[in-house]
Image (tube, rainbow, N blue to C red):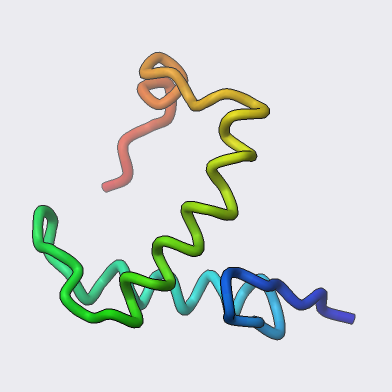
Length: 73
């Protein structure tokens, strides 16, 4: 059975549906463009609030670890 994911005030039925939602938000904006939709802004703030403590606990990836992955083509 799929595990529900709660991020902010949203509850997603599955992790995949949460991922789909945030990918859709990501693709609505160009690099450097401000997030103009209040709903998108609220969702992104909730995502950051949820995962910031995780990054604090495990540490953020270093530039070296990011560079070790092959460049997607």
